[in-house]
Amino acid sequence: MTEYIAAFDARVLQALYEMRDPSLVQLAIWVSELGRAWTVYGFALCGVILLTYRRHYAYAAGLAMSVAASGIGVLLLKGIVESARPPVEFQAYVEIWHSMPSAHAALSVALYGFAAFLVWKFIANPTLRYFAIAALAFLILLVSFTRLYLGVHYFSDVFVGLFVGSISLRLGIRWARFAET
Image (cartoon, rainbow, N blue to C red; front, side, top):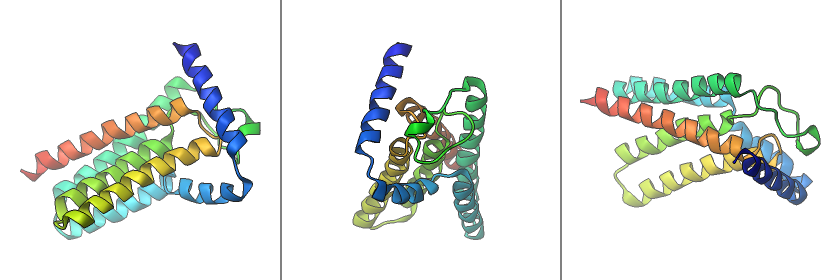
């Protein structure tokens, strides 16, 4: 099974490398920045402050838990798995530390997924609600795709990152619902 995953990862990496358009690399880097740890932590802090100001303490705690659990999960898994990044010749820019799981993917799900949950809770207009949720879901997928497109992660890294982020998101939502009652 490991050989199949490695072969699939290599095929995806090679295919995206061959399709890479140098004029789109900078745009992909900018989009990718929306999943960078400090960007996500900054947005999450702003969200927690806003939710606290509006006295939505359960949602503020849920958001903090979602993002914190994702960050901790990523750090622990990266330290345990210690997987190598793709070869440097595939990378649009050099990333450091271990590859699996993708922190950008995990943190994007934790933050933007919780934002989608908040949209569902607070926006009454169905058209606006569905548009906003679709936009946030697209943003998660776009950030995750840029990690592959830029050659700094394998597909399996991003997949595991999305999984870690989903578990963290679920934890944050469950906490918010529990604390809300």
